[in-house]
Image 1: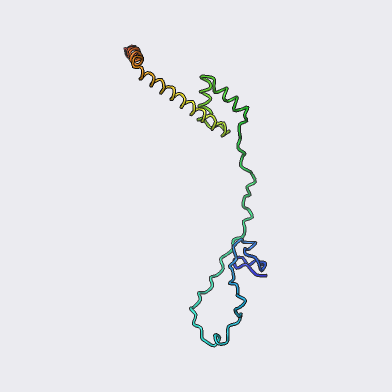
Image 2 (image 1 turned 90 degrees about the vertical axis):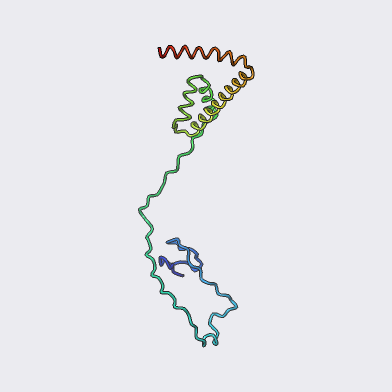
Length: 170
C-alpha cells in the first residue's frame, strides 16, 4: 500500500490516480532489470557533487469534497416536435389569406414555447416572402418587355396619385 502525496489516503500499489482527491499520482521511474539497484563500489567511493536540492514544498492544504454542493437532478426539457398531422393543420391555417398571415407573424416572429413551431412558421413566412418577391419581379419584367403596358399603367397611376395628394392637402 502507498499513500497519496496530496491527501494522504491509502492507495493500491498499482493505482495511477487517487481515489479520494482524484489527482494523478506521480510516476516513479521504473528500474531496469539489468541495472543494479545498489551503486557500484567504485562509484560509491567517488564524491558526488550535487546541486542543493530545493526544500520540499509543504503539502498544499487539501480541500474536503464539498458535501453541501447542489446535485442537479432535473433533466433538460425534451424538444417538442410537431407531428405530421400538426404540420398539415398549420399549413391549412396559414393558407387562409389574412388570418394565416397574422398567425405566420405571431408564431414565426413571436416566442412560442415550441421551437419546432417557431422554426416551421419562420421558414414558411420566408418562403412566402420570397414567392411574392419573385412574382412581383416577374410582373415588372413583363411590364418592361411590353413598354406599352408600362406607359398605360403609369399614365393611370400618376393622375390617381396626384388627385389623392390634392384631396389630402386641400
